[in-house]
Image 1 (cartoon, protein in one colour):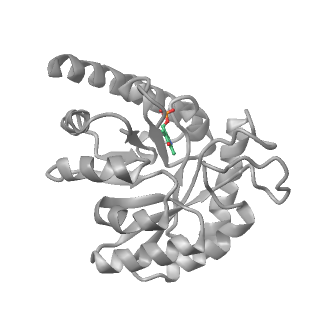
Image 2: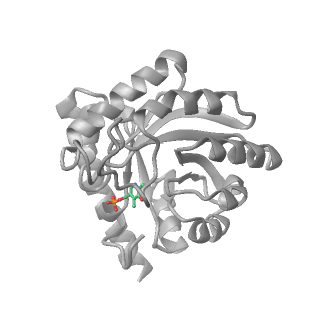
Length: 244
Ligand SMILES: *Cc1c(COP(=O)(O)O)cnc(C)c1O
């Protein structure tokens, strides 16, 4: 059983690795500019353990209820945990205990809460600003109720707040390809827009150079646009048994 699963994960990882290197080659980018983060949500800690044995070092989860226990079970593994889901302030204390990077920072209240809990946990938390590309100035038709993200015009203020907050490190930006608005169905254009937002942010915060974009279906577009991190779930672990 475990051997079968290991083989399956190993094969899937090899295929994703192939896709990333091909995309890098096409874009004229060195392969080591792009880091694979495996999104393990809905899959058990035993899978995370197999992935770590297969060389994965970056994993992501989107719900604290699920992630906290899994991270505790895998505390002996050399993993960095990314939190990529919508984060309620009442979950921040828990997330601050295991997350290395929170990719879904999208409001000032969350910055305050993350800073307080990072200090309490005596940890430094990396933060990415989640940008909602369906929220460009014109807010009509916005449908990010459960996807999160700050509108592009709010990025600078949030970046300054994170950079000034004790216990937090401003690492860059993240997006999920929008389902609505002018970028719906235009992943490459969306990720290119995220790159512009990233360079604006780097003008004042040069170290904030992480750009997290691209999932199983659109990682090639993300690599073409210039993403430094891709977040891949399904293509490594399989189709999720339930919505996650
Ligand atoms: C689930 C998830 C992913 C991975 O999606 P796949 O399509 O399974 O690769 C990436 N980013 C976020 C924010 C997610 O919630």
